[in-house]
Length: 292
Image (cartoon, rainbow, N blue to C red; front, top):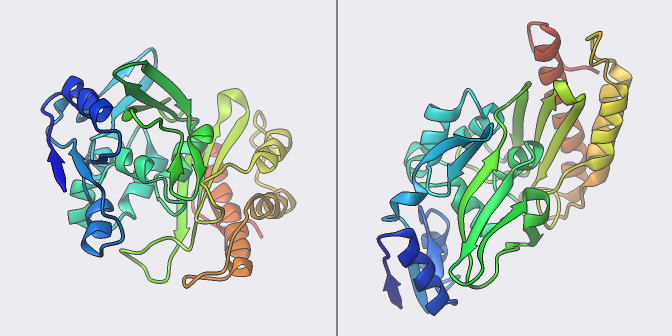
């Protein structure tokens, strides 16, 4: 197996163009596990860890641009106040050691339906910045980035450089269910982001379909039903219907972690709870009582 270790972004793009079959490695928390278990044997590894251009973040035109090499630990510590939903999801990723190495860029590259970063990225209208040496930069909305089970919209000569998102303008929440309390792959997961100035909500579902996805009908329902101006308490009817619509947006399967029926039920519960938490934050209500 050939090992490529570019020092700069330009060198990384050149190496990617010359070796389109090389497997990019950022933190290595997914890739190295697959290699160790002989589940994958690429012809070459493209190690992006030395590329400093991937390790920073900044603000541009009112949006956050976060490099693909920023770790989960840094997202929590440096951006938790601006991206609370993604920070909540980051806290559920593996152990502290994994969070110190793993990155959202790696999560995007792997494109696993169970990836914890995907639901908050979808709920926050994130856009993925990718680049190739030959064709330059391409911006891909998160909703169009996932194309199948562990497949994404990258061309063979492209690499993920960063993701762009607007800092939270309202409450954001992430919740997931696993077979234990920590260091676990999600049985299903859900994220919500309220955008009060636009009177709309964003959603994201994980581990509940071949790809991470939004619940578009549920979003439209909330946009019309929530009392954005008067900030009335959340109606139990609205919460229940929202949960039903979220569950209806999923296409779960039976596997070793759970049945399709359980995933649908769990998503409805997670959606109701996350909506109640977010709406109570928005109207200034303390506590986290589920609307039932």
